[in-house]
Image 1: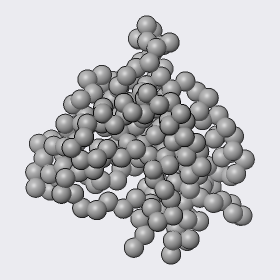
Image 2 (image 1 turned 180 degrees about the horizontal axis):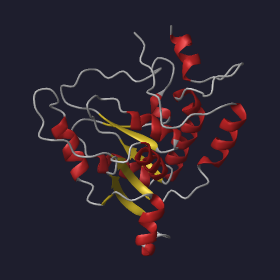
Image 3 (image 1 turned 120 degrees about the vertical axis):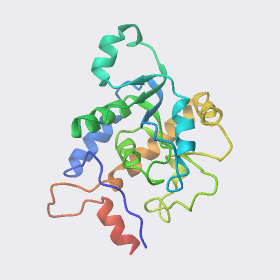
Image 4 (image 1 turned 90 degrees about the vertical axis):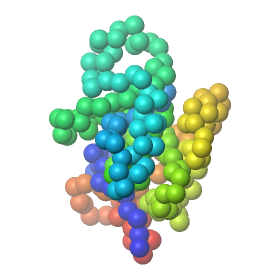
Amino acid sequence: FITVPYPSSGHFSNSPVVSQYVANLFMATRNVIIFAAARERPTPGERHPWWLFRNEILSAIPNVTAHSVRDYFRINRHLMDKSVAMLRFVNFTSGQQGMVAAMEWMRHSVFCLHPPGDTFTRKAFFDSILSGCIPVLFEVYQAPEVMYPFSDILDYSQFAVVVPYGMSFFQVLNYYEVNPSVIVNLQNGLKNILKIMQYSYPITQGHHDDAMDYIVKSI
């Protein structure tokens, strides 16, 4: 079988749009170091035993907001020119508006945490890639093997961080924070693969080099 990307909240229409977007993607200020767009889940049961692991990760981020980027920094003007160490966005009650707000936060963040939810892969993983936010994935004890899209073609270590089971994400990300050149390398890796993690829309004639092209290559 083939694992394919989830449809993201954003899509490209053609190659010039992709080129312009990528050129501007890392020009914006990324003043949030560690970001998560996720809520804690109810007490885990047999169906989702890894929710406890998810909740432990999210509870380590005390700074929580339901505001958009603009409103958050309007309220907290003293933070506008400073780095925010950690932030968690929890407003998903407004449907598409909440998703757009989450992606806007991702475009202002360096690392995006992706603890397991209903499944081990999350739509937010693909949103973060399109937002230029380095995905942080977690190994989970006794979890089934997780297949990410095009893993037989792509080297995920070039654009994502994996936290080994038993290690704190603080420990792992501290290495990257004190090595800015490594962060730049991961961001460059995102630039190289973001277009193939989305489905170009609207459909037009010609070659897109998007997710559909790579699905065909994987068959």
